[in-house]
Image (tube, rainbow, N blue to C red):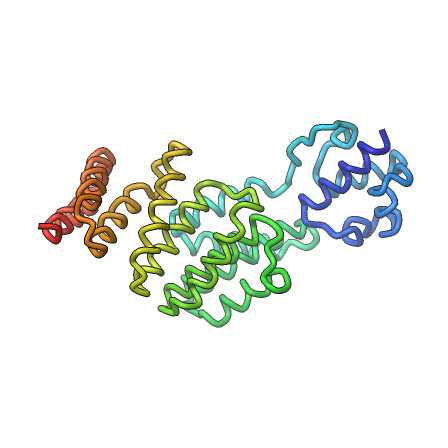
Length: 284
């Protein structure tokens, strides 16, 4: 039983982004947390309740061999911010972030990191202050850009996007490559992988590295098909067609154009269909 409790305390602490000292604050000493996690002793019921409350999990989770999903107080805020970012409603996101950051001691380190990430994004897209924005994002990264969790990849990909917007394609590519190198050791959402590969392909295209750009497109298309998602699929097919033309692979280009056309027709994307028609003319 002590072994299960010790493993679960460590698991949930790391999942919520706390150090042992941060978890111990206001409850016990860092040495006691260390001892609990090593299985040297088990916390009292009072201390265990305080630890569970701070980590946002039901106390019974410490007694199970299988990990349950933590109950995070700010899950709804994160969902809303992600939705608004996807809609590019940066003004609303900025308002939410400002309010949340003004709340003292209500966020875990991971939640604080998520909020600061989106603060940096909003500063760039609302104020076009690239210096302040990138300073905030870089301050959130672990030493030597060593990726520790999926959220780090979101931060790195945001830096890649901002440098792309700044037309600093070399720096943008550096951050995109850092993302893709860490795909396997971090459980990353398929949509984030697709978005990163699409962005990397665009950056490589601007650097006129068309072969590698096409390879990124193909990798992203494969992920779309494996996960049965249309997320960015139309844009990827169009990009693959365009790159195939640049690589003189006309047969491949025709296939990608047909697929992109079918998808855009299905989605009613009139503007994209016009662009695809222009691409057909380039192929002739």
